[in-house]
Amino acid sequence: MKKKSSFKLFSDLRLYYVVALAVIFIWVPIQGFSNRSDNFYGTFLGYDWIWTTDEKYPIHYVFLGLEFIFITTIFILFKKKN
Image 1: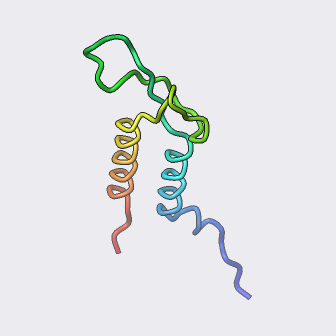
Image 2 (image 1 turned 60 degrees about the horizontal axis):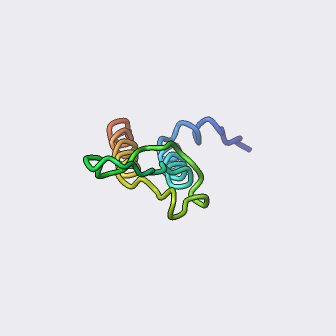
């Protein structure tokens, strides 16, 4: 019998893409608020688990969108063409 190599699994870029998307949707950027009127999008506080977000520390959707666009662009650039 032929043994399947696990190296082929790790050489597939789609696996890394799915893992990266899962990470950015589980470990999300958190938005804080400031008293400055010119800061429309709020301040970036860091990253935290999605289940710990609430009204006080909501998800920073601008950063989440930028992460999604960045990961998708990297995937498209390095995708192997058949």
